[in-house]
Amino acid sequence: MRLNCLRLRGITEAFPNEISVDFDALGPGLIALVGENGAGKSTLIGSVFAALFRQLPGQKRSLYDFATHPEPEIELAFSVNGACYRSLLKLDPRARQMESYLFDREGAPLTNGKKEPFDAMIRKCTGTSPGFLLASIFSSQKRTGNFLSLERSERKELFIRELLGLDRLRLIAATAKEKADESSKRVTGVEGQRRSLMELVSAEVEDPAIVEAELGSVSSKLQNVEAEKRHAELRVLELEAAEANRRPLMAEAETMRQRLRKTDAEIAEARRRIAEDEGLMAQGKALSTLVERGSQLAGRIEELHRRIQETQTLEVSNRETERTVQALEAELGASGAEIERLRVEREELSIVPCGGRGPYASCPKIRRAVEAGEKIPTLEGEVATLQLEAEVQRASLVQIATPSSQLTQTLENCERERRALDQERRRYEELRAVEARRDERLKAQERLGQARAELAEELAKREAALSAFSELDPVLRAARRRVDDLNGLIASFRRERDTLIARQAQINQRREQRKAARSRLGQIEAELGEEKTEVEDFTYLAQVFGPDGIQLCEIQGRDRKSPPLSTLCWRAASTTSSRSAS
Image (cartoon, rainbow, N blue to C red):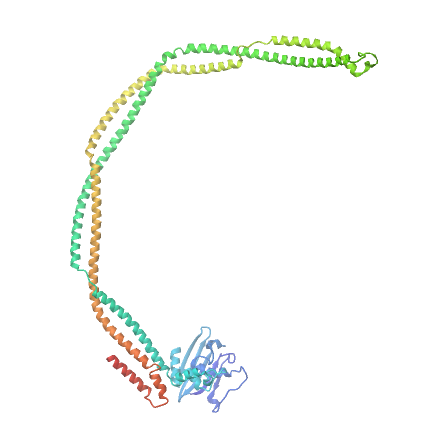
């Protein structure tokens, strides 16, 4: 591979704008790129790898993360074995999309901008990215891809995968194993279908003739019961019509009974009032003496009023005299107490040696004793006068035979008796209209009796008409119960018929299923044979192209003479074909 020209725009901070490197113009002998740190040496070398494999070498981040321009581009012109190509990458950092193109010598596009066609053409022209790194003198500053820096297991893996090219054999073996697994799953599914179909084919199916006979029998019974139900419904309709005719008669009879009860109540009320009138008329003689009794009672009341007035006057006079006597007695008590005190003081004078005379006569105590002796006669005269006056007042008190309160109570009783006499007098006055009212009520009672007799006659006629319907209710209830029973039988027979129809449909369905199952079972047997054959073929291919098959022969063939890979593949294919044929 030879590099011709490299053009960059907006890749890393080193090349924000467009730059171009013409390797052909530099001539032969270019062995290194030199410059200061950050000048873009690694970016320039890595862009060659990125132009082919859409990724900077040794970087885990995508190419969009290194964009420093709204429309970054990488373009590389190179030649392989004399054939010239041009690779062009157009990046959209915002949408994180990339268009990849590969052109031939004349500028004709070999890809459509998609990733997969581009990668396929690059692998065809330059190989894979690990092989390119191993074969290339270019490497990043991290020396990613340096074969000698890898671990022993990594070098072995890389040597077997890239240098010997055994990845395609591993891919074939893995693909064959996946196909074998898929075919095994399909075989399992087909065998499950085969078992289900075998169970369906071997299952017993009920005889349709038996179900047909049962269905005919049930249908016949259903028709008979439905016919019987129609007759029963007609009978119920007849009885309901009779009941409809009876209902007005019952309403009329009930109305007449109510009227009869009302008439009886009116007759009883008239009789009660007539009895009251007759009772009032019987009391007329007793009430005739009310006028005389009233006159006597009025005279007595007047006499009581007079006596009450006189008694109250005497009671007032007696109360005043008693108050005067009480005052005199109080004054007598005070005067008696004063006389006793004066006597005590006068007795003190008798014990004095001088007898109240001489030089000690001016002593206050002696003077009080002398004065007391002088006052005693006067006070005794006043006491005698008061006693006489008290006797006179007591003598003036009048004895009252009946107190005014008792007379007042007697007056109240007389007043009540007078009010009762007034009521009886009013009743006596009402007796004048009682006789005429009784005659009117007797005539009304007679009219009510005639109306009651007519109502009783009409009621007897209605009850006679209703007697013809005496057995209607039990007959109607029996007819309705019969219809309900027939409805239950019809529902039962219909359910049984529907069950038989469903059984018949299931039998036909199972027969069709068995028929279809037999047809399908042959197809399943053929498919199962093909799937088993395919499983065996893919299993054999996975074993042949595995690590212990052609891969091992390929590795050993590098050291000694062995058949080429194409011969081994042809033998494996021939063996597979022969196994399939057998």
